[in-house]
Image (cartoon, rainbow, N blue to C red; front, side, top):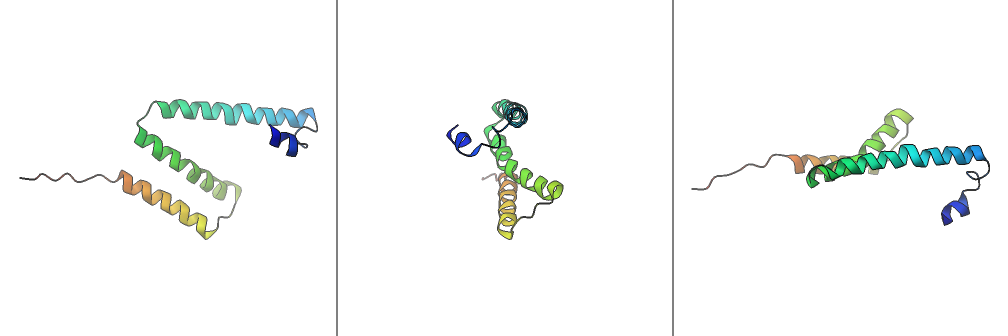
Length: 99
């Protein structure tokens, strides 16, 4: 709230702006994260970790392909590292039988 008071004058300038801000807080963010949290509570921890790591990757890729955002090479490398780590984690382990 202090940050809203300090920097939110355009948001608080009219009822229409405040209504849009309230709508964004309640529906896409609030309900979305409630559903996200409910889903994470019902799956195994390893799958929840993978989904949580994929969230920023999907958001970045949507920004690139839908909004025509550009990512620096460092950010592309970060996306690659996250995906590589998830592939390594999900790779099936060989079970060896010792005599």
